[in-house]
Image 1: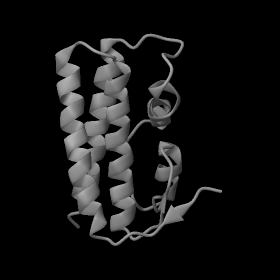
Image 2 (image 1 turned 90 degrees about the vertical axis):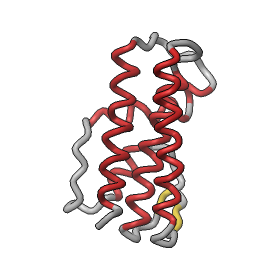
Image 3 (image 1 turned 180 degrees about the vertical axis):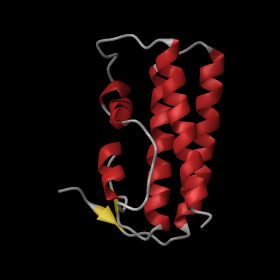
Amino acid sequence: MTKEQKFKKEYAFELLSIAEGDLETTQILLAANSGRKENICFNAQQVIEKSLKAALCFLEIPVPFTHNLDILIDRLPPQIHLNIPENINELTEYATIRRYEEGTFELDQEDLQTAYKLAQTTFAWAKNLCKS
């Protein structure tokens, strides 16, 4: 069983601020075209994770203590629509296993761009949701 906690609704805005900083970091790493490519995916995953947790806080839903994006998405009420691919949870491994291991495949520029776009989309969605 995953531990969870209900946070004050206002905490959503702090999470969004942190997620925005992570999005900027992701963009800088992507443009640098050097360093460990997994760090781009890690930061993109962090943007998505914090954005989803911000949405849960704003909706006053207990937030699970997990990096697993599917678990966070599954906590959203059915009437809340998030238009992201079903395989988004593949980024979870960059917040867990691939932080400490190279993995079995090399990331290419398309993979990195996709991760960044998913982060952008999820952040914009959460920011818009928290305005309502």
